[in-house]
Image (cartoon, rainbow, N blue to C red; front, top):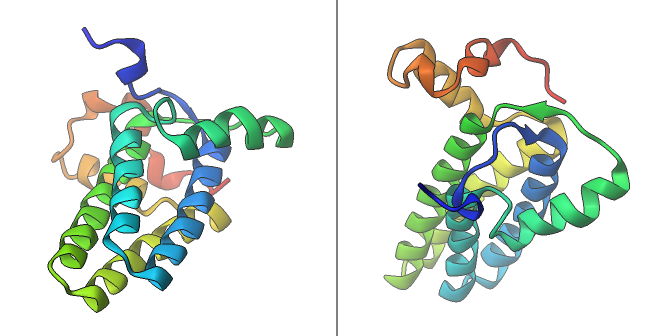
Length: 161
């Protein structure tokens, strides 16, 4: 059994997820502007930590959950599995950007990281989680079993926060 620090929360606060996405936008824009492998690594590491444990091990997650969102006083609980899936997509994209940067393909790394900016911006500003939409699509097609997230069965019908 995994320690509680290594369990992804379910449900999660939508506003904490959106706040974390906003912080990711800022870091990703800086990463694209500076175009250095170390920043791509930090960006990817943040996604890895959030895939592993949600906000528990992630500095951005902790800042969102413990500082920013409590001050806003906003709570809207949503299923965790689609958010974890979205973080895994972010990890994949930022991992590719990191590899491209390490191989000297800076422009390709910047373009790849730009995908993260778009997705995180949609999440943070409009409450549109592209990873969650893909999760719902895959669940409806039977690729992701219904048992993974019973509360997700109608996720595509929900209104953005």
